[in-house]
Length: 285
Ligand code: C2E
Ligand code: MG
Ligand code: MG
Ligand code: MG
Image (cartoon, rainbow, N blue to C red; front, side, top):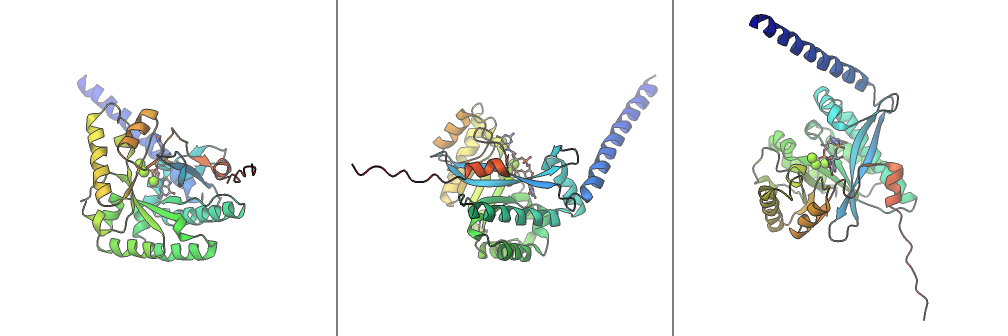
């Protein structure tokens, strides 16, 4: 009896494994041509200045628009692109498209707002990265000061000896660097003083329960103290409530990003945030 039940469990598990494998195979084969079929699109999420609640920058977030219109988020497909190496051309497409969009917005008279573009570990390890960035800057005419790259601690650590040199080259082109998902990766803090990084993004995991958790408040306070003494600016990710926002402000966190302010938006909705209001000219009396 026990043996039969065990066998059933095994079959059930096996079936689920097959479903997961089939789904993954389906995703992987459809992803293969997605770039060529022009199925990727970029959404933009505001990062605001906590003191003024004004727009400070836009994080560029990749989406896959599948045939039929369904929008797929990066957590579902970036790991596959990372594994099969396609993240390199897709990542290059992201950088180029974001830069083209920024230049187009400026040509329409819209505000020039910095873009925060995510880089994955595999992209960061790819030899042609710096060269492709240089080419994109040259071809699109973007002001490199408007481009910031977000890299996780884990991605930085994986690259070993060459990391510093690559960061210096990116920085040398006038582009900025920030540490994404700060506090969740395996790393020593020593890299913060060695690497030309200007900003850290506190992971959503420490923001989520900020109001209820004294431990999370202690962590955020400690990160703020560290950042202040190293002269790094800080963005809090995943701010969803006014309470979180108020607490972050009280800790001196300069920038915030989250559903409280805006979800990631398609380009057309983003453009509305970039309208420059003409100055009001008061009467002479
Ligand atoms: P990330 O860089 O940490 O981006 C922030 C993620 O948090 C985004 O998820 C964003 O939609 C989500 N988020 C923002 N505010 C809130 C909030 O208040 N609550 C909650 N629950 N979530 C919030 P998204 O767009 O699904 O992206 C997930 C991850 O995929 C990103 O995490 C980033 O690591 C990666 N990714 C996105 N676009 C790209 C890309 O172009 N290239 C690479 N290499 N990775 C990308
Ligand atoms: Mg990011
Ligand atoms: Mg992040
Ligand atoms: Mg994150």
